[in-house]
Image 1 (cartoon, rainbow, N blue to C red):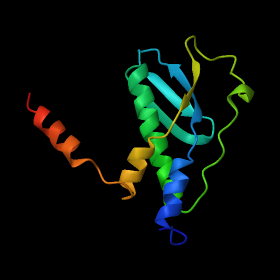
Image 2 (spheres, rainbow, N blue to C red):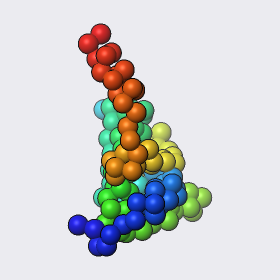
Image 3 (cartoon, one colour):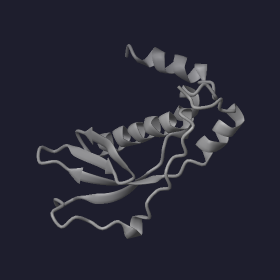
Length: 129
């Protein structure tokens, strides 16, 4: 439940100002990847490959930031990537990446942006092929 009534115009501005956040992408032993966010201790995304892990991380970050905004909370400032210190025991292939939230998806889920029905209908037409 929101702490106070959130003005839609202010909410749109807040979504537009959302920054990208640093994340640590770690390849797994079995070929998958894990993505963790230093700014959000409990956010961890997984994927069967790098691209899937990055997509899952973006979706997770977007949903988390949306939740913060809905509650009336200010998202934290992202850590400076240059100041993040790698762990000595990180596996080879570990990399620091920057992930931007999906602002359009957040606006749609908040009901502040209408989904393009033509695109949605076009996508439905391709499902059976």
